[in-house]
Figure 1 (cartoon, rainbow, N blue to C red):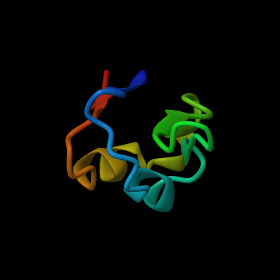
Figure 2: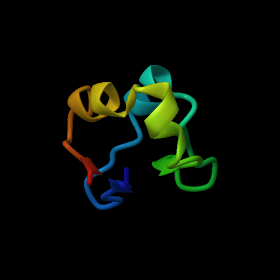
Figure 3: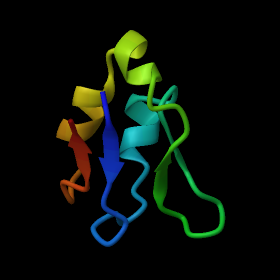
Figure 4: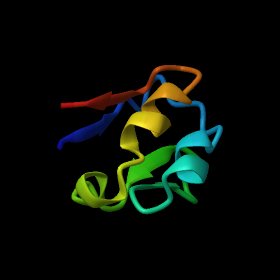
Length: 62
């Protein structure tokens, strides 16, 4: 599964990192979400929940 974060939409709320810490974390420099392990979506099973909990709809799964 491919995980894409639209950095222009991301506001750095941290919901994705809370819901799915195996895949997402907040970048310390920019304060926005980034993908740390895209392959973890397949075994962690939380990427869909992270996408649903993103208030700005900045996460796309393909």
